[in-house]
Structure formats: C-alpha cells, structure tokens
Amino acid sequence: MMDQIILGGMRFRVSIGVGEAERQKTTEVGLDLTLWLPLEEAGHSDDLTHTVDYAALYQLIQVVMAGEFRLLEALAFQLLGAIRREFPMVKEATASVTKLNPPVSGLPQVTVVMRR
Image (cartoon, rainbow, N blue to C red; front, side, top):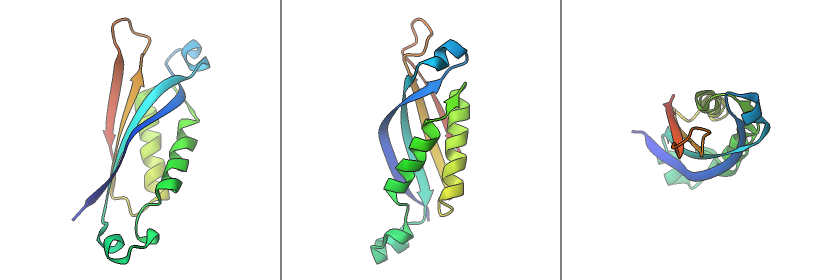
C-alpha cells in the first residue's frame, strides 16, 4: 500500500519564462508536492531513516528552483527527476507548479501538474 507525504503551499521566486526579458526578473511560483511511498516501517520504528527527511527534500527543491527555466513543464520534470534520484524510496511523485501573474493579460495564474 502506498502512503503519501504532501508538502503544500510552498512559494519561490524563480527565473522562468519563454522570453529572455521575462527570465531576467524572477516570478513568484507556487509548488504543491505529493510523494507516494511506503510509510508503515517509519510508523512502526519512529525512525527518520525509514521515511523522507523533509529538510533534505526542501533543500533539494530550493536547489532546483534556483535554476533558470523557459517552461513550467521543464521545471516540474526536473524537480520530479531530482526527487526520484535523491529519494529512491519515493515510488511516485506529483508536482503542481503554478506561475502566479504570468505575462498574459487577463490570466491570473497557470498551473502544470506532472506525475512521475
């Protein structure tokens, strides 16, 4: 049975956009992350080595978010790949990445949801 760890409501300033001018300034990006992994052993043992260390995960997220991206899709893809490489106990992960105030008149936000 797969259990979940959810990190929600994260906000970052990210260099993201199709045009170079857009990437020159940072844009506020929201991130919600769901990890699927077995947590029964951690529940029994109360031992951090049997689960994902949230602090280490957040540090990894910060490293990825410090990169430069053209597309939300690329950001989500790279983030999920990094999580799967660094935390092999994670069987699946979903990233919901939201660009707040994109440079499209009348569009308050756009979200990409990717699951790997």
